[in-house]
Image 1 (cartoon, rainbow, N blue to C red):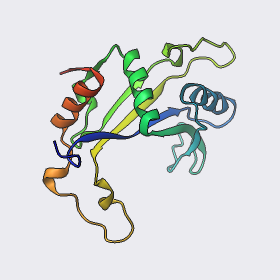
Image 2 (image 1 turned 90 degrees about the horizontal axis):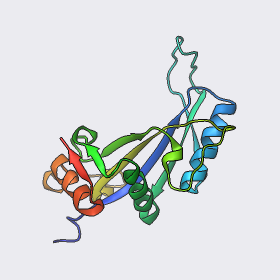
Image 3 (image 1 turned 45 degrees about the vertical axis):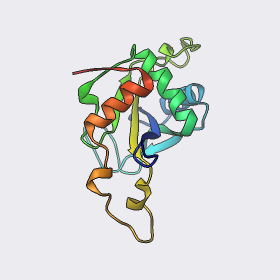
Length: 169
């Protein structure tokens, strides 16, 4: 197979949404740092929601972006928690995948800490081919040709082959 046509995991984004700044946000950042080994970045609200008491520019969560081997290692651990099964609706038409983990203590080596509590997280995986940068670069941006884009079917097959995951339709 052509090296430019082979799919790859570009990045894995792990997100914990807390909905408020303060102590819970600090605990969520601590959980992400324990699980991924990287320093999390605070996410900030873009809109106002009066019912939830959220203002624009308010810190409401944290996230970590993993790339390369670290991303694949984390993804293997996260899929193991899901018993190597993922729903077919977790894939979008562009071949990206998202799923949730209900509790951080499900990860190997993590214990429940009553000071921290229970935190779930969202895991988003971007799957594409090499050469995708032409759509994001600053100079001479181009559209990605139709036959070079990832499809949902190709992404499902890649996850099945690479990570031994059963995709449940």
